[in-house]
Amino acid sequence: MVSYSDYPSAQRAVDYLSDHEFPVERTAIVGTDLRLVENVLGRMTVGRAALAGVATGAWFGLFIGLLFGLFSESNWLGVILAGVLIGAVWGAVFGAIAHAMTGGRRDFTSRSSLQAAQYAVTVDAEHAEAARQLLTRLNWQASGAS
Image (cartoon, rainbow, N blue to C red; front, side, top):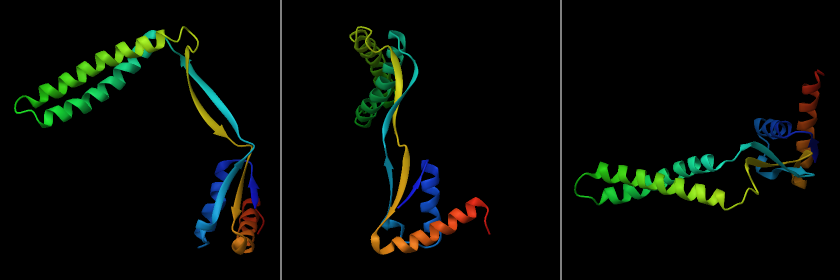
């Protein structure tokens, strides 16, 4: 097992093993000391919630419009457009109502991610020595040693 402080370094190690025809299906990248990080993206208002609902509703309306349009004998484009418009209106209404019902308890948007303090590259026991030799060579190359 070799540990790295960031995911790209662990990924680079596994890629190096792969480049040297090591059986990488015998490896794993394991993140340890996990923490949840929530990045706040902005303020959520009723208007923004309605706008997000418009987009979601329009996509759903497009899907329903396409289904009905396939079986329509005339004006299939009109059926699809009606589906998009009706979906957008209902999406806006439901988006605004859903946000208003929170009572201001969550007036922001965010993105959550799991982050690890370190990443360990683990290898099955029967291939551990070969991996150790290759990764030692990678670390020498990375440090500038010849």
